[in-house]
Image (cartoon, helix red, strand yellow):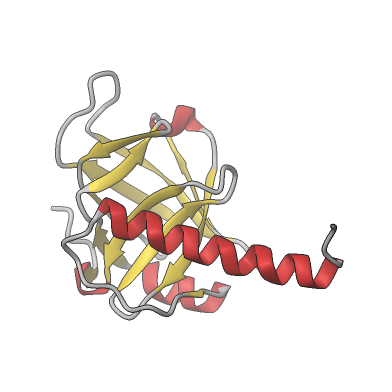
Length: 158
């Protein structure tokens, strides 16, 4: 039996949120999460990231594979950014530079000089009570998460 378009899209959105939440809970079970999750619009994403440094929790995705590594990145007001991984990956540099932007739909898009094969990667951003969850917009897979308390104003990279 096929669902009607509207019902199907509502069901799909509901399931996507629960799959995301379940994935994050399984990946970082020692952290406490709020049960509600909302996607962020362009204004909220710009406000959170512009002129801020963030550090992710210790599970990140690098080249499509989960890695126990933290990422710290500064998102400049000018659209430029720098990033650093806590541990150097085998085949990539530990730090990189790039550019970032937020699309009208609220997706955060990053293009690094070296990481991700220098191709633009966009993420849907979801917020729970105490953290942001990053989902790769191209693959729909969990990318990373950052506690809101780990967002610091200004460039904290140096």
